[in-house]
Image 1 (cartoon, rainbow, N blue to C red):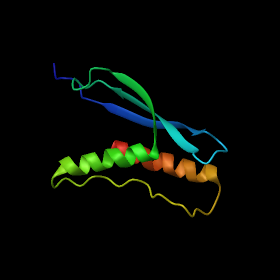
Image 2 (spheres, rainbow, N blue to C red):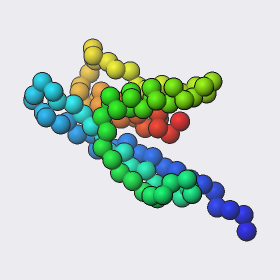
Image 3 (tube, helix red, strand yellow):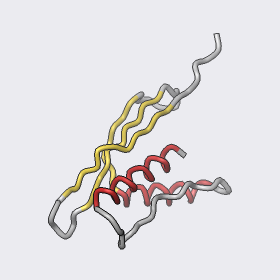
Length: 101
Protein backbone atom coordinates (compact mmCIF):
# COMPACT_ATOMS: atom_id res chain seq x y z
CA UNK A 1 0.00 0.00 0.00
CA UNK A 2 1.28 3.51 -0.74
CA UNK A 3 2.81 5.42 2.16
CA UNK A 4 0.34 7.84 3.76
CA UNK A 5 0.85 11.40 2.63
CA UNK A 6 2.84 13.50 5.08
CA UNK A 7 0.74 16.34 6.47
CA UNK A 8 1.70 19.17 8.77
CA UNK A 9 -0.79 21.71 10.05
CA UNK A 10 0.30 24.82 11.86
CA UNK A 11 -1.99 27.32 13.53
CA UNK A 12 -1.19 30.66 15.10
CA UNK A 13 -3.93 31.33 17.67
CA UNK A 14 -4.93 32.97 20.91
CA UNK A 15 -2.96 36.26 20.95
CA UNK A 16 -2.37 37.49 24.50
CA UNK A 17 -1.01 40.76 25.79
CA UNK A 18 1.71 40.11 28.39
CA UNK A 19 2.64 42.72 31.04
CA UNK A 20 -0.37 44.78 29.97
CA UNK A 21 -0.20 48.46 30.85
CA UNK A 22 3.55 48.45 31.42
CA UNK A 23 6.28 49.84 29.16
CA UNK A 24 7.45 46.33 28.31
CA UNK A 25 4.11 44.88 27.27
CA UNK A 26 4.03 42.66 24.18
CA UNK A 27 1.71 40.22 22.45
CA UNK A 28 2.47 36.53 22.18
CA UNK A 29 0.70 33.89 20.15
CA UNK A 30 0.01 30.20 20.63
CA UNK A 31 1.61 28.14 17.88
CA UNK A 32 0.04 24.74 17.50
CA UNK A 33 1.63 22.11 15.27
CA UNK A 34 0.15 18.78 14.26
CA UNK A 35 1.94 16.38 11.93
CA UNK A 36 2.25 12.77 10.86
CA UNK A 37 5.75 13.36 9.49
CA UNK A 38 8.49 10.91 10.51
CA UNK A 39 10.86 13.89 10.79
CA UNK A 40 9.13 15.03 14.00
CA UNK A 41 9.41 13.08 17.25
CA UNK A 42 6.40 14.84 18.77
CA UNK A 43 3.28 14.59 16.62
CA UNK A 44 1.76 17.66 18.26
CA UNK A 45 3.40 20.58 19.95
CA UNK A 46 2.28 23.87 21.36
CA UNK A 47 4.40 26.88 22.32
CA UNK A 48 3.84 30.60 22.83
CA UNK A 49 6.06 32.96 20.84
CA UNK A 50 6.21 36.71 20.25
CA UNK A 51 6.92 38.62 17.06
CA UNK A 52 10.61 39.22 17.76
CA UNK A 53 11.15 35.45 18.01
CA UNK A 54 9.76 35.10 14.48
CA UNK A 55 12.24 37.79 13.39
CA UNK A 56 15.04 35.70 14.96
CA UNK A 57 13.78 32.53 13.25
CA UNK A 58 13.63 34.25 9.88
CA UNK A 59 17.24 35.45 10.28
CA UNK A 60 18.39 31.92 11.07
CA UNK A 61 16.55 30.61 8.01
CA UNK A 62 18.15 33.29 5.83
CA UNK A 63 21.62 32.33 7.05
CA UNK A 64 21.06 28.73 6.00
CA UNK A 65 18.77 29.14 3.01
CA UNK A 66 21.35 29.77 0.30
CA UNK A 67 19.30 30.68 -2.77
CA UNK A 68 15.95 29.55 -1.39
CA UNK A 69 13.78 32.62 -0.76
CA UNK A 70 12.67 32.92 2.86
CA UNK A 71 9.04 34.06 3.23
CA UNK A 72 8.30 37.57 4.45
CA UNK A 73 6.98 38.38 7.92
CA UNK A 74 4.06 40.75 8.37
CA UNK A 75 5.36 44.32 8.71
CA UNK A 76 6.47 45.77 12.01
CA UNK A 77 4.09 48.70 11.89
CA UNK A 78 4.53 51.36 14.55
CA UNK A 79 1.95 53.65 12.94
CA UNK A 80 -1.19 51.66 12.50
CA UNK A 81 -4.54 53.03 11.52
CA UNK A 82 -7.37 51.09 13.11
CA UNK A 83 -7.79 49.19 16.34
CA UNK A 84 -5.11 47.27 18.20
CA UNK A 85 -7.27 44.14 17.91
CA UNK A 86 -7.34 44.53 14.15
CA UNK A 87 -3.55 44.96 14.06
CA UNK A 88 -3.04 41.87 16.24
CA UNK A 89 -5.37 39.82 14.03
CA UNK A 90 -3.61 40.92 10.82
CA UNK A 91 -0.27 40.05 12.39
CA UNK A 92 -1.62 36.66 13.52
CA UNK A 93 -2.69 35.87 9.95
CA UNK A 94 0.68 37.00 8.58
CA UNK A 95 2.62 34.89 11.08
CA UNK A 96 0.53 31.85 10.21
CA UNK A 97 1.15 32.36 6.48
CA UNK A 98 4.88 32.71 7.20
CA UNK A 99 4.94 29.38 9.07
CA UNK A 100 2.84 27.65 6.42
CA UNK A 101 5.25 28.74 3.68
